[in-house]
Image 1 (cartoon, one colour):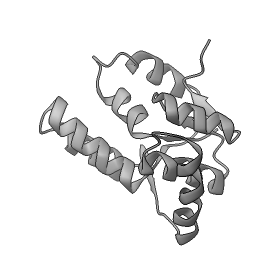
Image 2 (tube, one colour):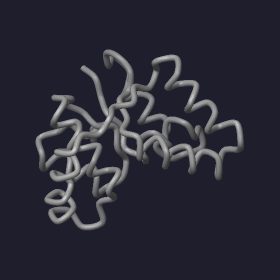
Image 3 (tube, helix red, strand yellow):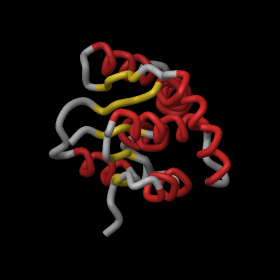
Image 4 (cartoon, helix red, strand yellow):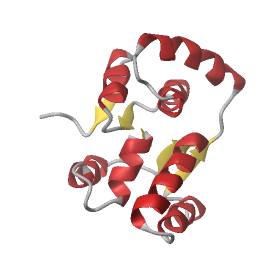
Length: 135
């Protein structure tokens, strides 16, 4: 099963000191294929990584895209239209997170690596599996 990642999920994978790091890494064990991202998540992840993890961290993200560990999924016009409704349904949901959920639905990707509470809520409401699972 493939998974998509929100900015919070992606950042937790990168930052070993992040409270969600171990849970995020464990959640991806056994998944098939690369982690799927939309461009806004990659951009936000690179900005956060550069700011908090050092100048080489964004380059590691780019390298992960180039070597196929992260798969960048292009947006379609219909994704942008679908985001409008989703943003109205969940308070505090970032546009990048809404795009992640909309694209996951379009592609039939059943799971989203996300640690942000509002993303987890929106994912579950849309029938997507929020990783890591609470247990």
